[in-house]
Length: 157
Image 1: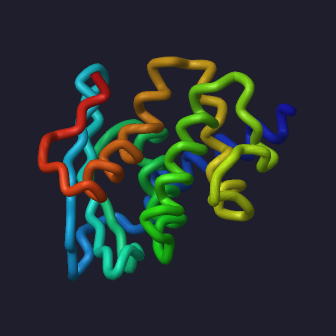
Image 2: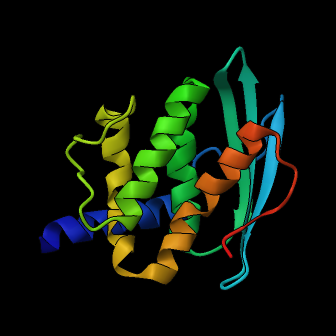
């Protein structure tokens, strides 16, 4: 288990130090801002959605390694997904990081799973630290707001 935890930490640190899809894409159809007032993490999620499919995605912000890594990893799995798939992905991810009985092997009801979900399981350990759950889910809640066209800032409070 120690080797697995070490691998998870390496993945989170890698995405935290060199986030993927950092920046605003050229064509944006929706965006949303998020803020965690407890720790100061901020994130802006940018989406280009055409005919219900995420064509491009990016983010900007600052925060802890978990917050940035979660946003980075999320953007990697969003591209090419339908809004419906993303809804299932959000529910499953939220379940993963908040529920002690979360099934990381794919038994969750929904349309999202497989290899993409496997990439996200490294964040499952945050459920042991309730304050860190908000760091891991900030980008996800902000992404949901962007999909809905909600221009109110998302807050973890």
